[in-house]
Image (cartoon, rainbow, N blue to C red; front, side):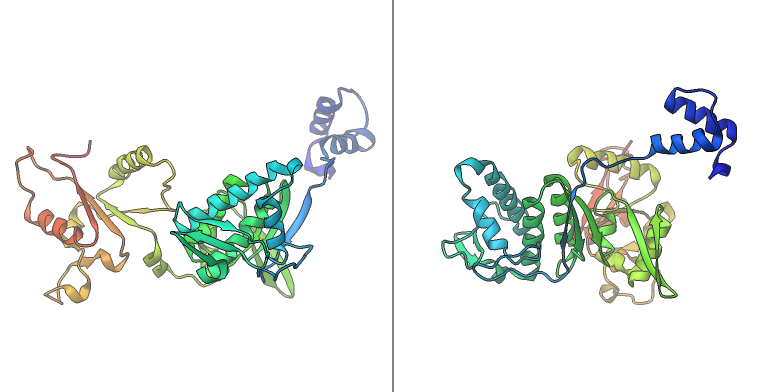
Length: 350
């Protein structure tokens, strides 16, 4: 401990913290410095766990945890709160807003019937039990409801990605980050959650019968985690969208324009940008390999990398009435069949 700082540094730090002078390094400088730097929690937060096995309990079920047992009773209380607890109604409204986003239906809302034996979903002039909408919706409602009912709590969630496709995972995490007041710890095998929000990531591995925990600070380390989880580089096929541009300057312009249209869209999460470079342009195609008339050619099918593809290029026209060159006409035709082409009106984007 003494070797961590020079004696003069210990004395200077001790004097700054205590306002004292003189003293001894062992009797005063080190112990009093550490005592002043120590953080003593005055209010220990509540800790709850949402286990990996989650299900909605039967009518009248009660539970001390938040696995889904007792969720009907808890929701019923905030659906129709007592006079002195009317503020709890806001929680029920918040959960309903989340359900509307998950189901992509502004008319969707949940209801606990008089019998309190199920959770009903009203949507598009239909009323259905929650379980009829699939396990994924069932899971996110349990987690979102527990996270909304609890406040200022450390909430440990085991494998929140179970039964959830990537889009549902992102919607859930976005709701937890923006609409609840808890601190969350996830244990997960999902690579999609690594980029879902700004968070601290820890990689837990087993070695010689013990667990080793490493803090992850770089993209390279994130990539290593994906390898350990079994994800392959070919999983780029499942990325939201790939936008092909000629070079780095086009990426700068494009990100600026996208940010101006929708500040919620994030590069690397909602879309990725890739460069084709001027010389490769004539070798690109938006056709699948099995659609190409000449099977032996030098075309590179960007559709094989990702089905959701956009290409951006300069028209290089000297005036608005000029025509695109044959290569750009071909690519515009190919990409506009199931994808999107964006060419400048004339000249360059700048």
